[in-house]
Length: 533
Image (tube, rainbow, N blue to C red; front, top):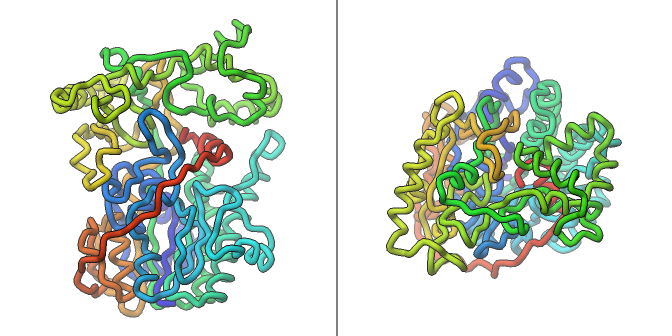
């Protein structure tokens, strides 16, 4: 193997440093100590579904086309998949150069392309994803035993220790599957991603012991891969960081409603929420209207106004042993009948998904029922920038450190699919919410931060090189350089100075496959389990 790329979702210096100091991660520590290493600035927005495609294409979301967990067509939404990534991936560059690749568990890679090698998709794929080549998932299961994309769906009986044990099992599966495929395909390029280094913070916030156990399990698998594959170069990178949120949940649409920008409805239209995609137990026999249970409707209205998310409510109910009971008995119509949601068509602008980190203008000629004339677009953006820049917490501090036109961070042929104004929370201490109700709530305890990590190690790596300015977009050209492949001149990043890189060159225009729908309720439910929807 010439190059191994290890993806650690949400890894950052503040998490790794104490584990290194305690000697908990000998294999990862050696890579960081023996190579060039440092912080890795992520993109805006620094969220998994958009950031991993940026890492493996080397371009900003405006060039590859994925901005969030969701893609929007007018006011309708679907979960993104690999057909929404409209740029070459690292393994496609390698394939065109005549090299073989093995790619395991990388987010937003389903359905996979046909390359020389193997691709087993990760996060946002279905539980039984289409893999390349056909039949390889069955081969993996025959070789190593069980292999799953996700943890088994938890119930109140499976909360806590059993659920965490499943996280450890998934981590082991990634390493074992990668080693099996590397032995079978003998690739020049390998890419394995570990997701639970992120999920452990969402599902077990503040549990340092569980974080350490997940990272030790990852380190064990990395060590086994290094022994089995003996790569010439190793790149370790994360998509973003992770840390404590000690500020507020800011409900952007409520703030905009108070300013007369957002209109609301109780007709079920609006940004997707866990109430809309809860599993069949909730929706069986329900038409989405009222329930005829006014007490339930009042309770639901209070919960929605307070921002009682699925993640929070589930955790409370699990502790009380009531999650399964409530899931079977509370009609979802109670929530629909009680909850205000954004009326996309009637609003001038709105936050459609919190992890987009911004506001979309409802523009005539672009959006199906646009209310803002094209000649007012820039003035409306000015109005939104001023409005959001003046947003303050109950403590009198600014909510946002930066409110800018999207062009500040997004450019390319798909930029118009993004939000029109980006709003970046102050030091990522605050989270955004699409909830309509009280203006502020409590954020999830841990969430994404801007700075991840990167390390480049190997015999031809200059370990003393200064990579202090490393950016997420630099990972792809750096990996290509380790493979002796010229980076694409249209990439937004550059090969890190730790590697002697070929000069960038022009590549033929990329011809992506037609975009296909995801429409996977199970994936949607898993996203809501993590609080993303």
